[in-house]
Length: 350
Ligand code: SF4
Image (cartoon, rainbow, N blue to C red; front, top):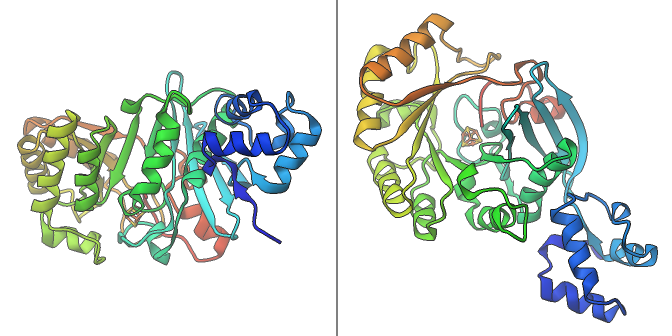
């Protein structure tokens, strides 16, 4: 039997041609589009203003939604983590962080990850495959579907290195941000990278106003190599030069993401150098205390974290501390998937 096609991969013209070939008026195309992007439909059964026979014909050829929800965990702080199964049986995670004003969804772009950061659950298995655009955008759609309202903040910080799947991500973000798509503001999308130089330069060339976050984690190539040991790591000077180009082309300030690891990268000297880099590259700093887990790394205690933040501001850097969310449901990326796979548990972000 032929595999079903992702409906979102169909262009408007292709959909209109398909509808005409099935004896349907063209306004059905508009109705279907609205169900997908305005009502966040995850099945044809929800498309109640379409005739039942048409819904059946569509279901025989297309998938309106690329993900099969497998498990949802809810943390005491309201964070929700979704585990999805894909058509080929692979699994990905998405995290929804609702707050009073800001509904944030953290999405994945790959199954596994080639970057293999030493403190990350997703990197442990290496890269399995890229997600296709429909699998990326449908994580945002599912979050809207579950919330009953549109999310207004999208962070591309889940499983995978986004800039190693850039063209599929860009297509998905066009659907997330486009006026005919979900309509999320471009400035409310943040793409996080471990520092893939060609990808940063490509983003600069595209000139979209998406925020760029660099997972810096260490201020020297030597120290960084211990935390990001894989072959995808670029020299820091090249990465920072690419970030400068991105800022100049887009006008958007880079954020340096810095996971604090006790006795690894949290000394006063580390903070002084981090502040220097941030000032030199006009970046702001987001400190993250690593999630507790069973890896060889641990977070500094609260007093040490506070001291790091004070060191940065005293050295003239703009720095904030990102609060860890959903610790009781293992919200750091890759952790739930690995637990379900029985591949153990390491700690920290993706
Ligand atoms: S932290 Fe991000 S880039 Fe590093 S291995 Fe994990 S998913 Fe990949």
